Length: 261
Length: 267
Image 1 (cartoon, rainbow over the protein chains, first blue to last red):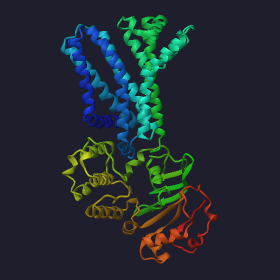
Image 2 (cartoon, chains in turn green, orange):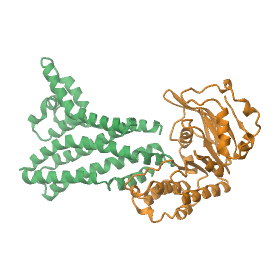
Image 3 (cartoon, one colour):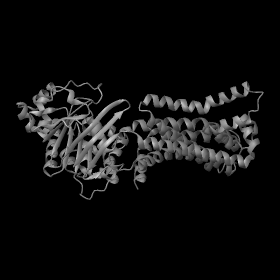
Image 4 (cartoon, rainbow over the protein chains, first blue to last red):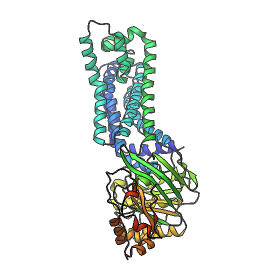
């Protein structure tokens, strides 16, 4: 199948890139250091949550955007071959998301395996790995939307950074301001709505509900847990995160199929 | 063989192709020429499916295109600038393209040996010079013995030896009865290679004729002079002007006097 062939070649291109290697090594070294010097495995996982929530969207969106801009002419070459645009899109996407996700997952998993579990239950570790992989997929999909939509590499990279800022720093700041300004009003529903609009916050809440550390959840997480309890909350988070992947992927595909090269 | 009828394309508010009608026949080398911005590259991109036309129809080998992509099995394309993924080697790119295509007609690896590329093929593409990458593009374009070839400024960046190898190949392909369409600004090259010239202006075909006929009718010995002659007598080219009714323009008379120049289908 065409998609598989394109994935194969894209993988050989990307795996040769040093950045993916450094990315995986970074997680490996960080996890190893946390396990060795951080005390318990649980604490290590918790610190990793913070790294995952900031770093993975950043790397996903930036690496994704940069790779797509630099392979634009190659994509044009492929488009002149008897290849279906949808299959090409699928191949390009999987060939990009897969190495990033794998690099992260293996980088984190290896030290835990090496330390024979590090005194950590399987479920939180799996949740962390799954969340990291899912966030990678979401932000690579958003990177596709940006790279296809913006011809200009500089505008695209700027948009990528803005999106990352929006979902990480600006969002948190915005929620704080909201809480302060509207302190006298019932804010639960709007805050829930705001949460669903941010895949990073959704992931954070979903992860932390596993750790039973309510203090770290902040207002958004506390509201979420209060309204949905832990299982239903997880389900809603999972559903929303699925939409967060499906939406950008669908939009990216449509943009790609209609684009004039 | 390719038939284009009433092709229209605008980029935003800027019209580029304004109802283009042209027939690219097989067994011939057709050169598409025109000032910069007249839509030569856009025309080729529409045929290749890279750009979506706003209106008109494209028929390739008898079948009208409508979102198809399988017809590109019969097309070989050599772009003006070759850009490849940096980390792959030429051999891997060729293998990828071979993988993506069926090649029942077998592979034509003649250009690969004629360009003496075998040492260069295993190096990563970023390590190759621009000219070598152009050679790789040429190899890929001719590799599957496609029935139709699009060559965009094919000899730009090639050294004289490679340039003459490529020209020989083009003529060989033409003699086999296949279709070659090339764009170029180098008139001497077009004079050498092209049987037929299509001159685009303002997104329409301004004139179209056999190379020999163009020279004969303008009384010029060199093609460059002949085309300049025709360009001088034509309307002033202004890309800012919208697709217009050319009947209102002077200079049409010289064409109606010339029987071998068929063109000015301005409708």
